[in-house]
Length: 257
Picture 1: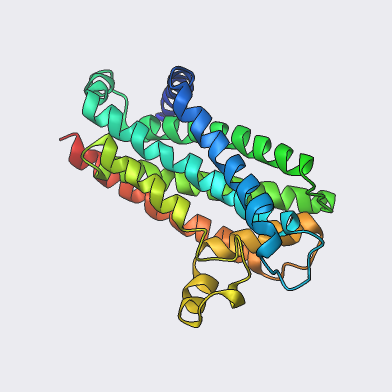
Picture 2: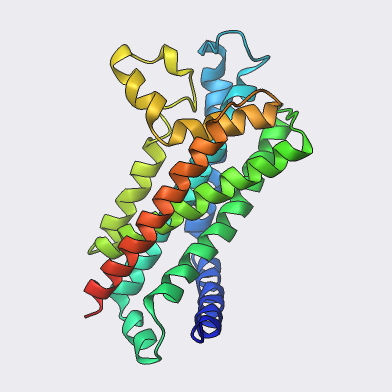
């Protein structure tokens, strides 16, 4: 317990460092914010008229926005892998270690900074969605649940990305993780109903972790029944977080021997 204040102080300082680095890497920040917006506009205006959601939604924008919100969270969280990999390659970790700063606050700094960036970019995406016709009908409790699901997913994915950054040997290899995170929402209910996908893909799309998160966001934002989807989404996030934190500690020790 005596080390807790020191760990918290180190994590706070390193979070500020990561946010400062984000300000200097403006192109990456703009990309992580604008790509989900552009994809949302493409799906709504280019493909929306041809996509059938079963008549349950007044307009395609009402269906697709929750999927884009998760896509934004996933893509933004994946950039943590590159930031961690760059630290490992650049030698700054050795300097931190010489100051008796452990791996947990170093990685936590990246994760908290990622969460702050993601909350900002998600707010931007949501604002654009409202401008192009998205009309949420969430209750106050529903808004809190939306925030909880999104925050849990962002933190879990950011820690997973930190582990990938430790595993990757180069920032370029770590950058490939962002492609994976951007792809995962597609074989889900993010952009089309699962029953419109090929039969052989139904099992994966229905049971992968992205689908319950998106179904939770969609139902809560539109004021519709969500069943146990939020609890399943939170369980996936909690499991991912526990495994990622444990794996990150092991990988950090291996990389800094």
